[in-house]
Image 1 (cartoon, rainbow, N blue to C red):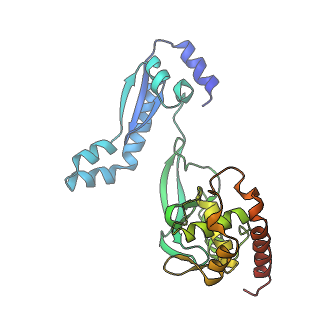
Image 2: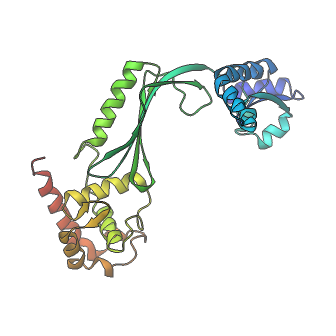
Image 3: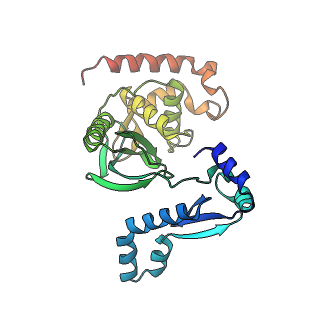
Length: 279
């Protein structure tokens, strides 16, 4: 559906109410009541087992919420309050298919350990869901709080999904891997954070945090035991370059401070030397 197509239909039928498919709290709007009803019937058929089980186990409210139904609202109401406005109103039934999927989560930095993993499974997806794809496979790595990494692969080709999942897991577990690089400012923030007993104090994004911690470990300045901590070399490095006396790392252009020049140079030398060591 395009905004232009939705606009043409709305212009032709300005006084016609919209038909809203309500699906476990999610709402999709349609011009045609038949399209909304078809989606609801499809949804209820896919989730029939869960709905029946919730009712049988004494969770009627959960079953009622999961059961799809159709409501109505004016175009003006949806234009003002509906997700996506009139451009999001469907002029057809959303595409639907089943897809193959795999997922796993890991913890750790240089030494990653599996937290949980799913075997191959099949799920039903609709075009309005974020994980919908008609591609053979899509893969992704997501960084979560507390050092957790999630690996996902999904698509319409089962073998492609299996291969992509295995390759992505192997990449995540490899140390070093092609995502590793040295960001001196990031590593210095890790060192200062550990010296302050809070590695996340100066770090904002999960992916850079992983990269910077791995670089600090490779340089021999941080060790990964029950929790991250400075090595003796790391403590000496922090004292040698007086990291505790530096301005707050959250200030703009912190990495350009003249006081950091020597520390940045030493980090470059340590990282280059680590890259030459046999793995």
